[in-house]
Length: 151
Image (cartoon, rainbow, N blue to C red):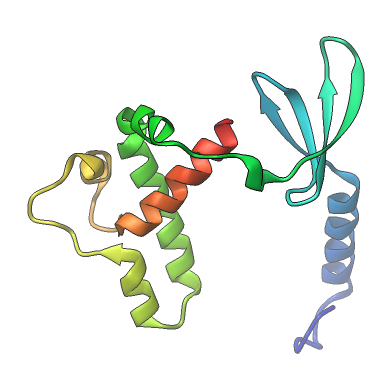
């Protein structure tokens, strides 16, 4: 449990055990406007749907591969693209803190452009020098995930 850190305190052991116990007891839930409260056991296998309006619990077997992202879905997100780019920049920032490879980090972000495209307006307005400008691939991944979660 402690890995290579043999000199840990008893308090740290109890904290880790309490966190593990709490994670096994707590349920991961999402609130959907159309489906109600979704209790997620495993994203790839199944989830529970709890309909609070009818007090019914139904078990659904669901595979997220059946959710299609269409061009109409992507076009409807044009007004939210600066926000998605900002979220993608945060994702790049957290990944780059863990990366050891500089070349891999170069694939995630781009240098600050001289002419700011409309996608990066929000990042440019909030930037004080430390925000990341994500590449188009990262924005595309975050955009598709955002659409899938909305569906």
